Amino acid sequence: TRLSEYLKTRIATPVFPSLDLLHQILIALWDGIQNRQSQDPKLNDPMQAEGAIEDDAILVAQATMAYISSFTEDTLRKHSGDTITTIRFDLQKIFDRLVVLHRKHTYTFYAF
Image (cartoon, rainbow, N blue to C red; front, side, top):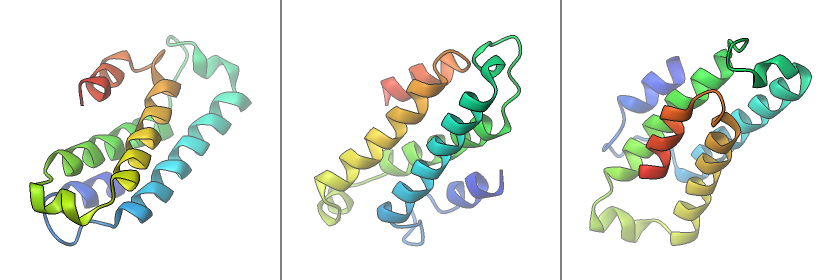
């Protein structure tokens, strides 16, 4: 997606979006996944699912994990531990919702 590409090109640069904005994006993606899956029960069946929002969420989550993984000691000091924990929790909510359909990506998150 364009958002994930935008994020990927800004990893390890000072122009990556703020963690507060990233939190809002991740919450919106989680909400979209939750609403879509509750409106269409067959999306919980791996054989029936074709979820563009789920794929977009994974790409954005992967860019987010790469960004956080690129933090140096100085970068970590600039961010509050609570904010980083909130982002990790947002990612966990997304991957917990996708575990049935995207097990490999969920395992990647838990390795993160």
